Image 1 (tube, rainbow, N blue to C red):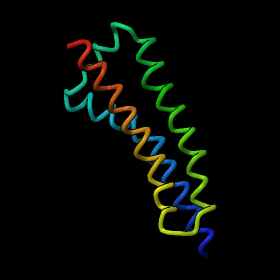
Image 2 (image 1 turned 180 degrees about the vertical axis):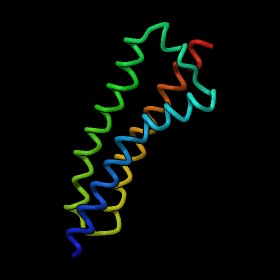
Image 3 (image 1 turned 90 degrees about the vertical axis):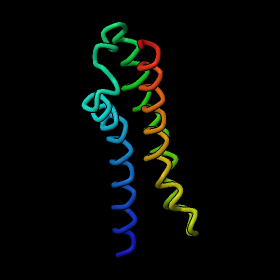
Image 4 (image 1 turned 60 degrees about the vertical axis):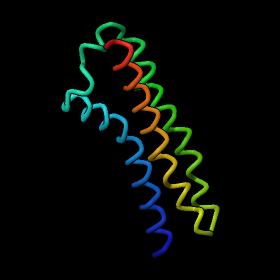
Length: 103
């Protein structure tokens, strides 16, 4: 039963990491903190920086999170936090950069 739990934790952490930055984008737009009009100034740069960059960051973190299965101490939970926190932090920093640069 433990391998099933570990696999579900791994999948949930990576799913949360994959959806974290786009969810933050939607919350920022709905709250008014980030205007979709700022994307119109340079949509290619926004796509490359935010969507593609966040996906690449998440993919690298997802590969790194495989260490969760190789370590058997309490530090293994850190490997599950990395694909959740790092892409979210990257996505928020890009959103902040675009929100500040066009204000």
